[in-house]
Image (tube, rainbow, N blue to C red; front, side):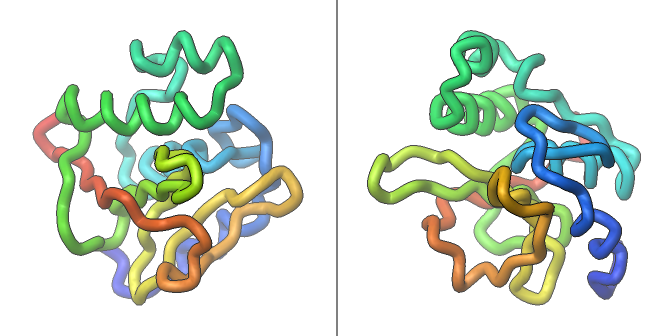
Length: 145
């Protein structure tokens, strides 16, 4: 695993594209998907491939997609919950007003994470303690998946 976060810089120029999963554009789950694919040579399921998410994806209900997809990734043992993040862990954030998981990012070390925050910004490196959403779960990839 990288002991610095220099590898992250190539992701900070990628524009936000809803449903994007490659260097031409990504959304919040897309950045997780792309980092796993590029840095770890691991293909994780897309939201479209997850049963819980399929219905909500078609309805374009972002809030339901994120919560249900993350739940399904754990239930199907692609990921498991941990207490403290390590590089490449998926961070799941909750909107406290809605009390629902609605955003994900990927931990890159030193209290920072990579995220695709909105359609108005390319991917960015954010400081975990300053995130406006509450950290709900830390998910680590199951190497035996």
